[in-house]
Length: 116
Image 1 (cartoon, helix red, strand yellow):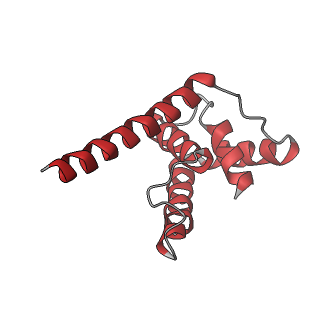
Image 2 (cartoon, helix red, strand yellow):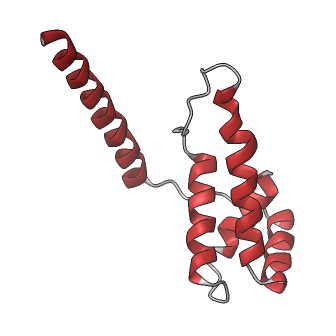
Image 3 (cartoon, helix red, strand yellow):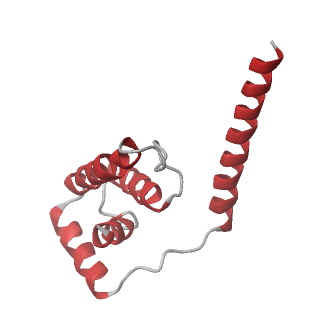
């Protein structure tokens, strides 16, 4: 699966790939690398369902939207030269900010329920 993620990253930078496929590819790569899941992994059984269903389905859909010649080229590049994904401090700050916002909203909801 790591090979497909690397190839999707390469394909998202190719000008021959349609915009819908680029956006879906970026979303799949971001979801694969993000520590945030739709269903947290600590929830028994269903916590891993998003990793077993959503990620492969997203990869499949993105691959189907990418032209076959471009996909085979990106796959070959990904096999020869593994991708070193860029480090982005802004993206890390956004993810941390989302977690802080989520924690604040949960704290407020609990405080509101307790006080009423």
